[in-house]
Length: 443
Image (cartoon, rainbow, N blue to C red; front, side, top):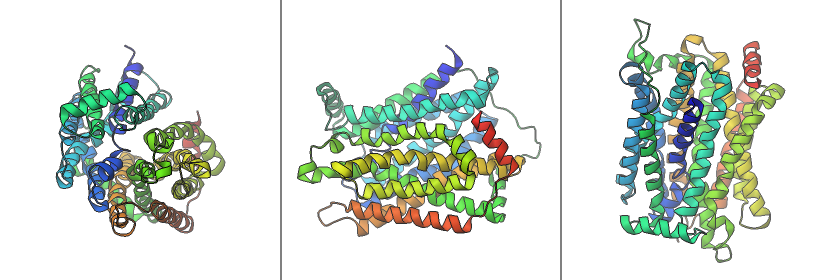
């Protein structure tokens, strides 16, 4: 089989086994398990906790001791079995620890899958810059397919009778509510991916040529000296704050749409029945806005593209605040999902380019790792924990219903404040290095 096709399958499954449950976890926690906002916030923070240290630690193991494809496979197999156990867990504190274990296995595979693709493409004499992006896009497609699969086959509102039957059969076998099937689907896919990876070409550990390469340096801790640079330090702080926004939409988007079932006239609406599919418009938008990034970077430059992303987050939340299953409200929900692609892609890509062009080449990889740590690690923890506390204490009504208009309005104000502060505080001039990097992306 062609190596590009093999890596495309790997990329598809890498995100399928995450998308099967990530955006529906809120619905599972609030509607099925009846957890409080704080309990769910703690559960969701496991993604950020694992992202802080596990990718770097597993990177060291892959560099020094274990074949990359084997480590990748082992992590996915363990992740799959942990998800099986997770589906049988009801108590939120136990769920926290089990999901944390699952995330400690899964989060490193995000970076390991990139490394695996880069290594195998280079070993087969492919131009990584040209060949990898189309392969990576299939990861987003895998995420979308998983969301649709979960909505159609694991949801109590499945429109297909045989989908209901399949889901009910698994539910009867496991003794769990039908929505826990999302973890079984993800677990089966992950075990398949783990076994599949063992049949990929070998990627043996590459010993570092630097005699003085320390464990601290391999963890990327030397990049923390970048906090001595005002502009870069400021960028990292705002990266963390924007990372919190990403987790807000992952945590509550599907739950928000599902909660319209509590309003009698909307109980059987399209928004309720196909909530996960509607949220998947966000991922479709993400794939399309990736194609528009070169144009926006050339036309506006890195700082303005970052600002566009931040304002897009304001629109993402603001449009949700006025959303409803019919009329203008439905249009607002759809527009919010479309805007998501701009909010997510524009900051990630422009931020990565800023790091690429503003740091010394000797610590550039570490700096990129720090960027991911601030967004997916600390940002995720802040977003999940703080939002859970705020929603649980200020926006949960006595009957257990949530004031979603108030929730999304607060998130929108949060994003707008970040945008204004970034505009005033972040000083940046377009450089020749940036121009060269943008031209490279464009071609």
